[in-house]
Length: 459
Ligand code: ASP
Ligand code: MG
Image (cartoon, rainbow, N blue to C red):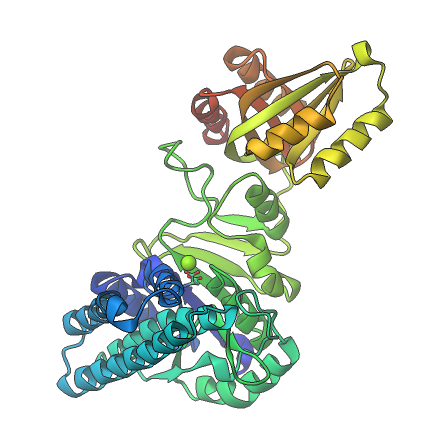
């Protein structure tokens, strides 16, 4: 019976999942166990390689190939070592080594070109960076075939079409869908496991482009949405989206299901696992996205959907933004109006200052600012000149959840916790989805652990 494209799943593995032979063999096991679902496998470059390639090509504008040959050889050896460790079938190994060596020759030509011109353009950066994904996928395809998986290597640049905005190219969805349905889908429906690259594409002239750093998640979302996949899996090195950063909260746990809105809120306050913008194409098409751990595939991870509804009031996660400042403007002494405050906010914003949140309480305006640098500090001084204001270094604790406002018990519990831990804290706002408050510098981790206890208590 003909299989429909909606049975296909997209599995994207990040840089740490393919960083060496042992990680790649974990990926192989995962792909094997998912092969019935017609997976399309999208890989990042081995972790650290994109950085190395970009550095190499930038250096090429100032140095000769001879001066850079050690760097190039180290990239080559890195990949050849993985082949030697992982591929036992003689013929496949030999062929794969040759493929990698050929790619390295092309890289040398590129380095030579940039070195001769003494100019590294955005185009050259993309061309160089693309080798990272091309190498990791070349190797993984050979690994699959030497393990009797019916895989096929696909150069995604023939399918994922973009504009010519090098380094940050925009996807041409129409062209991509056309090419994908014409060229990729038939292979996939034929039972082949397709191995292809994240992050890269090509423009109308066939010139290599990239979608911006970390762009492989976006590639997965683009291909998954265009093909109408059953699910998009983002395989990484943590157990999905957690209730808190495990480096600060030791007993953080995985959030099993969440909505797109929720992950958007989380990422705004600092959660880093998955940037919501990268999965937008999937969410728009209501394709479920699951975040999983390559090194603990037994963990179910986090399922993100457009419609997950949690009805009961619940605190779901806690986040900390360090290196912030709180700006308190005393309104009563300077006779300024709310309108004036809005005007100040807009001036601060226009000078590039990152305002996280603000509130107006008892004749005081509180403004929380993220990561201000020296020039921001100077702008603040200029903009607030003549006003009665105070600046303190703080950390911002954000408690995220659902329907928080509907349960007075939750507010009470948080208020008690706050008062005990940080009586001076500023509460910036309490909405259905979040409560943000300031904690004095150095107190954030403690407050975060206290707040996290409310999650474990089932609040
Ligand atoms: N390899 C690319 C990068 O390091 C893309 C990715 O990993 O998603 O930015
Ligand atoms: Mg990555």
